[in-house]
Image 1 (cartoon, rainbow, N blue to C red):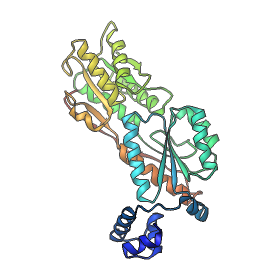
Image 2 (image 1 turned 90 degrees about the horizontal axis):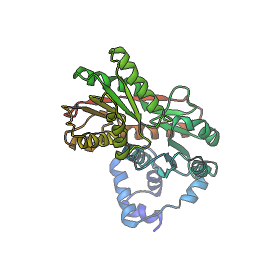
Image 3 (image 1 turned 120 degrees about the horizontal axis):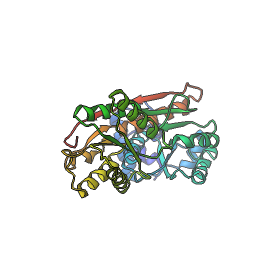
Image 4 (image 1 turned 180 degrees about the vertical axis):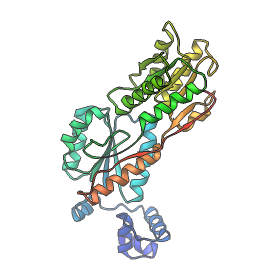
Length: 326
C-alpha cells in the first residue's frame, strides 16, 4: 500500500499524510485521526530507511533502563512511549542491567544514526562512562540527575521527600524508624538516606537502622526486614524506598507475628497503582512516574531540534499519600 492510496482513503493530500507520519504540528486533530485510521486500515508501513536518508533523522529514540522488571521503570517507560508517539517518534527499549558492555553495544546506534537521541535511567555512578560513550549526542537522564550532570535531566526532590516520610512517621508517635534502602550507587538512594538521617537529627531521634536491598524485589525487602527484626531493639516503623520493598517488609512482619500498623508502621515510595489495594493499604510517597517519562521525551526532542539550547534540570513534585499502613 502506497502513501498515495492512504491519502485517497483519508481524503487528504500526500503532504498531509507525510506531516502526520513525521509528527509535525499544524494538522487538525480530526484530520490526524482520519489519516491514522486510513493507515491502520491499509496496514501501511512507511519506508523508514528512505525517510531517514532523506531527513537525516530516524524518528527513533533509544531508551536505556537498568531493570525493566521494576514496576517504577515500566510506568516511566509508558510515559516515554506515549509522548514519543505523540510526536511521531518510536522508541527502542533496551534493558541494560547497568552492564557497561551492553550499554556500549546499544549506544553504537547513536553514531550509526539509527536513533536520534537517548534517554537513560541509570545509576549516577555510571554516568561518566555513559558521557564518554554518548559524546555530544542528545541525551536526557530520567529519574536520576543533578545540576552538575552534563546533560538535561528530570527527577524529583528525593531528599525532601524522604524527610517528609520520616516526619510523617514521627508525628504518629514512632520513635525507632528504620530505612530499607536501595543500591547506594543510585543517587536517589543516596539522597533518600541523607533525608532520612537529616530528619532523625532534626527530630532528636537517636535510634536508627539502615539495611540495603540488593534488588528492587519483594524478596529483597523481606530479607532486609529480617535483618532489622534480628536487632536487639526492633524498629517500630519502616520507611522503604520502593513500594515493592515495602511489600516484602510487610510480609516479613506478618511472618514474625507483627501487626501493621499497630506493632510496626510501613511507608513505601513510588505510589504504584496497586499500593492502595494492599491489606492494609500502603502509605507511600507518590512519584509522577508517567510524567517523568513524558517530560524526558519533551526535553530530549528539544535537544534534538536545538542542540545548542541550554541544559535543563527539572524536579517534578512528589506527594505523600497517607493510608492505613502508617
